[in-house]
Length: 409
Image (cartoon, rainbow, N blue to C red; front, side, top):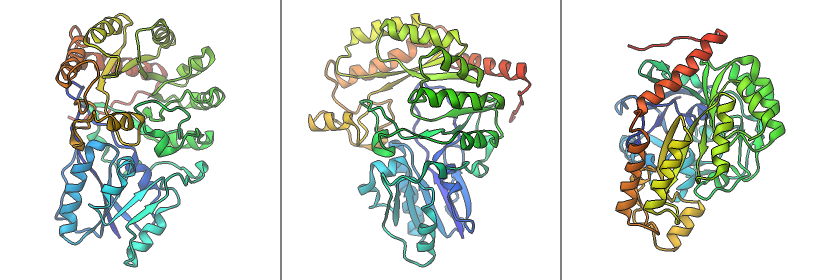
């Protein structure tokens, strides 16, 4: 059976450094496919889709809300040819009902141990409209190594420099952050993978640079300590979301190859200043993740916040606009208050204002978004800051003998 798996393109953030990372959802799904399925993967962000190719079945994996409408267009083109289409991924789970209007089938939930039934049903002409495994999580021990062989690896680099591969060491999240939908998707219980499974996957990734995509590593200190100890011999270089603010944890993370973290900067407190300093003390760079548009944000507040962000010497920063993704507290609050001004999913890029802010007009918030990007990178452009971070990781690789130049001219 020839199965074409597609990852739709989406609009990137304005001002953001332009590079494309290999997607994670499709390679996780591919690892769970039955052995008789011949899968071809197309990432539309770096490849063209051949709509005339002969295939038996099409899967469209969508992680982001901003991919949804393009996914519908792709599905319509294949269905017009009589080819059945199944949707999956995070965005499908968030928009399950409207997704059913645009595909022959939708898959909801985690895939391990569940795809055999889907493909048997397809072969027998009994494909179901919905396969719903939401919150019926497979044993975390069953999560194996993702099938990265489906990727065209030479397409994922930044100016000839090898970019990171994505992997995850856990699922679920015990936190309940205001703009986040992770608890809806993966449950409110932290589900760490066994160390041996994580190490096996890390060791089998033919790339020294990784992005551990867990929502936060700072969910269980003892687990972090054990994980980092197991990772040290691998000599991988990795980035992640927050790491526990603990001397032993940070020291082990640095030894295990922590390169930089994405750290949410939610105010201009001494706590945040010290948090960034401690990462730096252990040689871990910080890319600040700054969310604009909360109800207490005024123009003056944001401008003073920018002074603080420049003062704490972030290595990089990514500015986004509060976006009311469905199944979040943000969506519930803004929708119920009648403050959402656009339900066009193409606008849900985190770079466009789709709601009425409390302390300014939508136009002013959009203006402040560009102001922050421009001011932060005024003296050193984003490309230059990115180069400095890449140079640091290459220097570390050269020091421990793991540097592998991979350049695509």
